[in-house]
Image 1 (cartoon, rainbow, N blue to C red):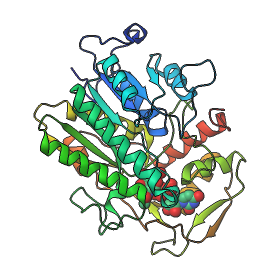
Image 2 (image 1 turned 120 degrees about the vertical axis):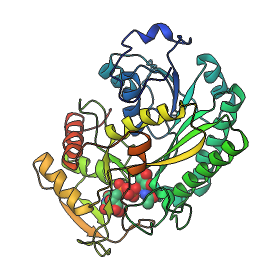
Image 3 (image 1 turned 90 degrees about the horizontal axis):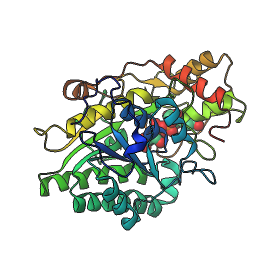
Length: 374
Ligand code: UD1
């Protein structure tokens, strides 16, 4: 039986004993890309409500386990936070045989699929790598799931599928696939289409597509957070690295957008709220009355500008973050804001954390770990 999203931590038994075997009544969730930012925060919520978690990650965009260790640092910290064990396999979704072995070893019940390349600018420069990794990886995963009869899936999609949205807040009725500005975004859109086609062809599949807006923040323990490899491409980790002195100045991409202060507006949401949204989605795909593939927006429904975010973060860290307005970034859109009514109604999920909470938690993480997981 799948735990409900609001259930309190219930199964604090030792999961070590469960390795490679399935325990009755405990669902096994395979998390692809679980060593990443959203994946790692989600695993905490899964462990807290009693799922058994198996992680598959190729560690291309996150730090791999250190020599002689079996888990990447982020997942060791997830174990420390939860007091629970999880299993990790450094496997690429492109490696069909290895992936199949993991599915068979654990008798996986349900999958949350995060693994993807996600740097928008890089995707413009390396479209084939992005399509190969994100599309072929997803197709291979779906094929292996079909073969082993595991047909419940939660997919990490993105508000980027709406392209340059025509109205705000944007709801799930809004068209998708038109005006997407980069290969990363198109790969998410095509994955959604593939999953929809699959559920039409085979009625046993149940898929929830979660369209995230801008996840930021960090776990309140300060033990895990966003730790991109190389120079951050997203705003929040860049701000945080400026605050600890790893970067000099934030480049604000465009001051001439048609917005109140001329900078882009985004619907930022706390990653822990987003993580809890996955428990709600798991409950949905476990509901026998649910069929097909259905999309839900996860966001707060409130947009703030780049300058407002810099100001909020400066307040949280107690120092002015220097910034400089530069040219627009290729592929950016003016504004995103989310209508979260459907998720609230059908998944019983709503974000509760504020922008100040997001900034406080990012600052706690970055100030305690100036060099991330190094
Ligand atoms: C992008 C994708 C989104 C994806 C997310 C995760 C699009 C349109 N959006 O979100 O789908 O899930 O990345 O990687 O494809 N900014 C600066 N300076 C910086 C960095 C960012 O001014 O150094 C600005 C950007 O112009 C943007 C805002 O900050 O207005 C947020 O940028 P970012 O954090 O990169 O996220 P998105 O581009 O919104």
